[in-house]
Image 1 (cartoon, rainbow, N blue to C red):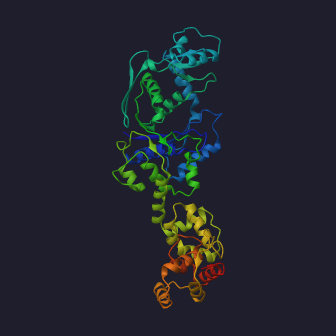
Image 2: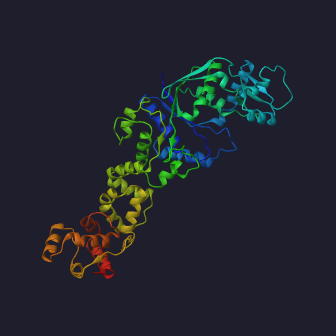
Image 3: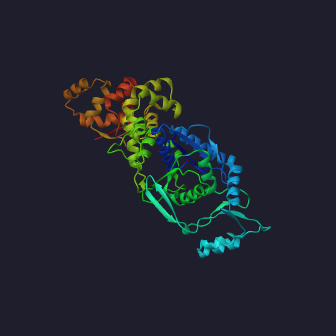
Length: 448
């Protein structure tokens, strides 16, 4: 059997990170089994669908390097097919025309008795009135779903309402379009959020009514925010673009989302190749995963440290449009290995580079440290050199301890309390610029 999975987002907003994780799990499962991963855009609701959201979905998946097979399927192109399925069910008396008015529907919803929806279930004659087509849910028995993540789940048919297949305007509902397209696309495994479990029972009912072979279902727990509540699309940090814009590397985001609900022993840092080799459904947890920004930043910092310096430099200059001249570029190339270990994101690295090299002076983030007259006199006559041993010998001659002078030099060269090593900075700044910054700091020093 050729394994076929799919990701089926609606183009109605930013690409949710829960959706990205769903796409990732589907993509990995297909990769593990040498199958196909398909992308379907569920755009039958034209009033809410928009091109901007479609672009966001495609850009987000592309940024994460989650590549789909074949052409993108646009559900709106299959509407005639969906209608044919609805009328086929109607012809087989597995569906019916429902003429309930909006007022009657409101009354039924308020009564919370979905059995009243069946008023026209066995009605024979057509009426010259607007109608929807409803599916005839079996009145007895159970629907059983052998979920590959949740285990066997069953529901009594009488608990499910006769749901709508076609609206009054002739457009299909989600339940019909989703089931029909999954069948048409030969999807063998459906991996999605556990908020779709009820939908699955309705879609299984359609499959069974039409005697289609059922796909395998896997419903994964949702992602919760840092206070344990469902991550809403309205939250700023729910969209993948938020993380891309804050400077998270795509490979770090993939690693983080993979571990957000799936595990491989105690492994924390997992490459794409390892993920493709190791991924399975058995290791997906059954409880909700909680978003943890600190963990994401930690993982991203690991990938930053391990990334090739030349590749990082290219990302800064091209992807993040670093605005520096040729001389400053040379300094960045020399310094990037020292700076990247102190950044959690690409944005932090860019700010650090701009602070160091955007001008002759750094951006000063702390007040000028206090300095003794003896140290000030020593530094005025010192020519910065990257030779640490010679500097220590000079300090000994003047009876000055490194711990007393190092904070001021660090401040003068970087403007920060925490920075690369002093001699690393002198190396990539050069003697002339290091001396310039040191003299500037000395002129503004607070004497003890």
